[in-house]
Amino acid sequence: VSSRFAAVDWGTTNRRIYLIEDGVVARAERDGIGVSQMTPEAWPGEVVAIRSRFGVDKVLLAGMVGSTIGWRTVPYVAVPAGLAALAAGVVTVDTETAIVPGVSVHTSTRGDVMRGEEVQFLGAVAARQVPEDALLCQPGTHCKWATIRDGAIADFRTTMTGELFALLRHHSILALQLRGEVTADDAFHEGVAEGEKRDLAASLFGARAASVLGIRDDAAAASYVSGLLIGGDVAARLDGSKCVVHIIADAKLGLLYRSAVEQLGGSATVIDGEAAFVAGIVAIERRMQ
Amino acid sequence: VSSRFAAVDWGTTNRRIYLIEDGVVARAERDGIGVSQMTPEAWPGEVVAIRSRFGVDKVLLAGMVGSTIGWRTVPYVAVPAGLAALAAGVVTVDTETAIVPGVSVHTSTRGDVMRGEEVQFLGAVAARQVPEDALLCQPGTHCKWATIRDGAIADFRTTMTGELFALLRHHSILALQLRGEVTADDAFHEGVAEGEKRDLAASLFGARAASVLGIRDDAAAASYVSGLLIGGDVAARLDGSKCVVHIIADAKLGLLYRSAVEQLGGSATVIDGEAAFVAGIVAIERRMQ
Image (cartoon, rainbow over all chains, first blue to last red; front, side, top):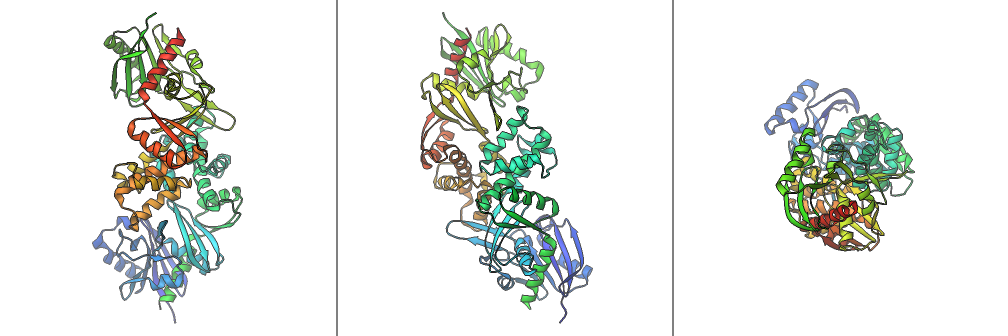
């Protein structure tokens, strides 16, 4: 039985389209036509265009396309959520078009949601890039930390780490200081050490005072504040344990998180997100048959 | 000996002018002519106008007027800083015009700065509104926490609590949720309890997820997020101790901080900032003679 379909990782601001033949990527495209660029009436035509461009009938969509700002609102699958639960929760738009659900945590004490990252997390497990019991991290604007147990997403937590950095860089009193590049340099490590104190509002003004008093060069401030935010995020997740964090990220962000994890006593691996997505969407498509 | 002078609490966006006769306020004005509204050449004329409007010769200025964006850059006085140190650090512009210095912390591990709040802190001590050994808090865009020992500012820390709330309210993914009023209601107290975990980046996204999942009404989100930020700030400062916090604030912000302090095991008093400023500037002016 041969399988051929287009898989789309359709996020808020970007999308990636993969032509998948017998579980292997035959062709890939990336563009800026994110969900926020779409109007409600544009969806059917856009998917017809993908079908025609890639010469396929079957299209499987994941990510924000299934949210309230997407094409169809696909209900979240509650944790624990494995590949079978995701496949069972797929919503079909027509016989050849389907949308993968997101995953939610909804207990008496807290709630959390993800859409798109679940395919990568479970894909990394399916491809044996990570063990069936593991802590996974996908950094970004909203960083996702998932606990995998018996191959399923048992729990997860989203942190606004990347968004906080962007807010500070563009709109805060620190904006002028934060124009530099972020690298895993000494200032970054100083930031991680400060971030471990988990006293963000105080530490941030410290970056301002360090500039006023000439304690730290403004060129180093971006790395310092990035370290502060990432260090605080990692410290809260490790909470003193020395576990392994499997980081799904591009090389640059992967290196920053890995450096912070290692500085705070853990160890880390960095996994490519596109390969994880493909492994996940192939595994879901197989379970739908 | 009778004393008559104008005292100006000249901040970044506002200023308050007091005509002080024998230690008592004879007249007060408040306007939006903050330091950021002034051009370098406008300072002398503006102070001449104050002199003429209030019928005084002597003018004593405090706050951001002494910063690099103010009239003259007045060097910070390092902690420990009492009234005598502030009076000794005053910079005279001419025989009748002087600017009070700010206070700095500059150790091997951290730096911090304040300009203007020091007059209120030491004024509250001079007026016996607080003891000579006390923890004081002045909430705001940049919240100042000062440790008073033997009547002097022994140490202090600035937190970006108010600025973070403004950034989130105006520019973040939470912006639409945060349009409501902030009051010390149940949602605020839930936020304080969450803030005590000192895991801000995660707790903030929790406010988003609570909206998506229908766990918390968006009308309550502003109080919740305010509680989260203030609770995190207070928890980091109390750090488990049951001390008394003397809060220098207007009634609304004073109530929020007081509620958070009491919820987290401390106790609190709320002190009026204008009276504290006047007590402080009178005490400094006396020491200059």
